[in-house]
Image (cartoon, rainbow, N blue to C red):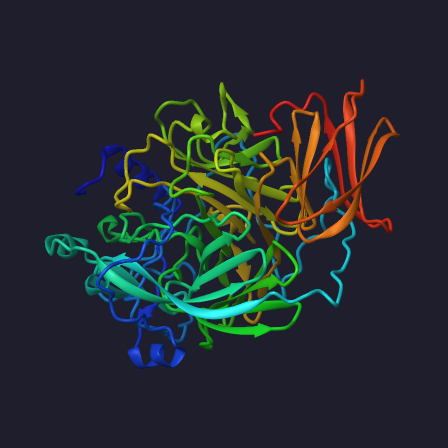
Length: 586
C-alpha cells in the first residue's frame, strides 16, 4: 500500500486474525444537523491554533471507525434481525463481516473471559478489596458550595481533508447500520489538500477545569484544560486526516480520524464506529454541577449509546457515566469502551512521560517487533519491568505496545509528564469494570501518516469488556443495558503520582516527603504510621490547585501506612507502601 512500510502491512495482516468488520453510520441530511445545531460554520480563511495532539490508529485489531462529512448529520437504519454468524452479502452494497470465530489462545496463557453478562441494566460484580490502597467513605460536598459553572458554545478551526467526498456506504446486517468505506485510490488520485473548517463546540467550565466537546465528530470530549496552569492534558491532531488504520476489508478501505480527545467506542472492539458521526447533546445545570448528556441516536431497533459527563462546581475532577442500550429484538455481541488520546502539557508524548498502572502483571494485546523482547499477543507480561526495560517510562518503549490490565484491583491508572509537571488520572472503583488498557507508539515508530505535525499520543482506555478479543464480547440481550461510572482528574504540581482516588492524589518524594492535592478545598489530617504505631499526625489544608507538602518521619520499618481523614474522622485514603520508595517520584 502506498506510504506504508512492510512492517506496518505485516502488523495489520496479523491483526485480521482477531478483527471483525463492523458498520459505520450513514451520512444524513443537512436539515437534521441544522435542527441539532451541529453544523460547522463556514471555513475560516486562516486556521486557529488548537492544541496539537496526535493519535494514530492503534496497531492492534479493528481500531477505526469511519466518519462522515462533518457538515452533515447521520440517519440511522432500523436494525435487521441477523444471526451473528450470518454470511456476508455478495453484492457491492453490503460489507463483509469478519470471521467471528474465536481464535485459539496462546498455549499456556490464561484466557480472558467476560464476566459481565447483563440480564437487565448492568450491575457489575462487587469490588474485591484493594490490597495496597483502599479508599473508603467520602464526604459529601456542602450544599452551600459556591457555583462557578458556565456553559457556552464556541467554535474551533481545524485543517480538514475532504475525505467525506470519497466515502462509500455499505451495510452491516447484524447491527442494522451502515459503515463508510474510504475510496482511498480515488482519494489519493485527487491529491487532496486540507482547508480550514470551523466546528461548533460546547464548553463547560468551573473554577478549575475547562471542558470542550466536539459534538459533530462523535460527541467527543475534545479538550480538558487545567485552569491553574493553563495546560491541556489531551492530545490534539493539528489536522483532520484519514489514517490507513481500520477494521474494514479490503485493507485499502481502512481509515480512522486521529482527532484526539476522548472517544466513545462501541459496539465493537477498539474505536468502534461512532467516532466520526454527529451526536446530539443536552445540558442541565444546577448550582452543584453541570451535566452534558450525549447521544449517538434515539433510533429504535438498534444498539445506541448515551454518555453523561458531569462537572461539579466545587471539584477539579469530572465524572463520566457511559451507558449502552440494546434497543433491538435480538442479542448482540458488544464491546463498550471510552478511549482518551493523551499528551499532557505538550503537543506530542514526550520521552520522559510516565505510565502509572498499579499492577504487577498485564496481558499483551499487540506489540511491535523492533528493539525489544516482549511476550506476544494474549500473553501475560510482568509490569512495569519486562526483560531489561522499565515500561512505566515511555523513553524505554522501543516500538508500539498495547496491553490490558483486566480486573485491576487498584483504584486508578494515570499518565504523567514530569517535565511539564502535569498529568491525568483515571479513577474507577476496584473491580467495578474489567476493562483497563494502555496503548502507545514507541518513540521510533515510523508511521506518522495520520498527522502532519509528526506528533504522537498515548491512549488510556476503560471499558465493560476485559479485552478486545471475540470471547470478551458481552452478549447483550434485547432491552438490556451496560453502564458504569468513572472519574478523571487532571493533576499538576505533584512531581509525579503514587496514589489517587476521587478525593485525594499524592506523590511520595523518595520517601522523604509527601505532596498532596485535594479534589476540592477542604481540611484534612495526615496520619503516618508503621507497624501499627503512629509516627506523625499533621493537619493540612488541601486544595485542587496548590499541593500541600508534609515531611515523612524516618522509620526502621520496611513499610509505612499513610492515611488521610477529615477533621470529623471520615477516611479519605488509606495507603500501605513498602520502603524504600524508589521510583515513586517521577
